[in-house]
Amino acid sequence: SYALLILALNMFLTKHTDKKIAFLASLFVAISPRLFNEVFIQGHYTNLLSLAFGLIGLSLLESKEKKDRILFTVFIFLSLITHFSFFTIILLSTALALTLLRRFKDYKLLGKFIIPIALAAFWLLPAIIESRYWQGTTEGPSPFVIYLLSFGPFLLLAFYGMYAMYKNKMSYVLAFSISFMIMSLLPVFLFPVLPEGIRNILQKLFVDTFKSTVTASIFLVVPIVVGIKEIIKHAKYRKIGYLLVGLFVVFSLYTDYVYARQDAINVIQFNKE
Image (spheres, rainbow, N blue to C red):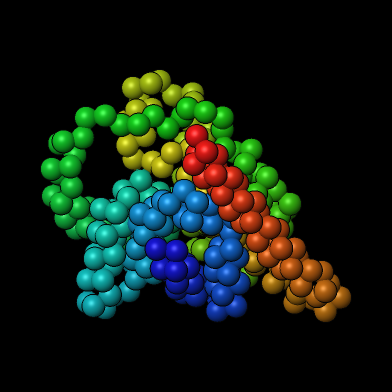
């Protein structure tokens, strides 16, 4: 699931940006501490499978070839049945991105989601009927602090990257990245202030507040990479760009090590008990 997500992200970004941005963004995501913790420490594999299938499907969304339309249906269906919370984010992010770009005539693209939704509804119906209780997702401290600690030093670079994406006509991937982060972080800000009944309904559709920061961080990497690339393009600041790449790699790998070490300590303590 880990490798598939990286390949899917590379495929999606290659279609909407260029190979260099796609490669570096995929590399940064591959060593992302939050992702490392989610997969190798927490063991949440289906989350990434859902997102990977969804990104592969989105890469085929605008294709008019019959084979690609069939593959789109298959991959979006797989995304939905694997972890439908991530499908919710992908679908709403696509709709919001089209709205931000004022591509209202392309709303018909959203109609392509109807078939995989219908297939998944039929597939998941028995499980939905049997499901009676849903685990709460708003308990505990907000993970937004963890989110800022993970990417805080690079947030300004991300804003610069967004500006560069806007100037360089990467409008779709910019709009989708922003939309994806908004939809991912929605539970962090919105759920705590909603009435319990509405919150319980939305919890069935969205990822929980901790995972929301993990998914948001995946597409935060994209403007960070674009920002670094823009810096490297200028000979005067090229060394600063390479330094930022090095800092990101070192920071990420060190935090991966911290997560792994903490997990090892927890295992040792558990065995002692």
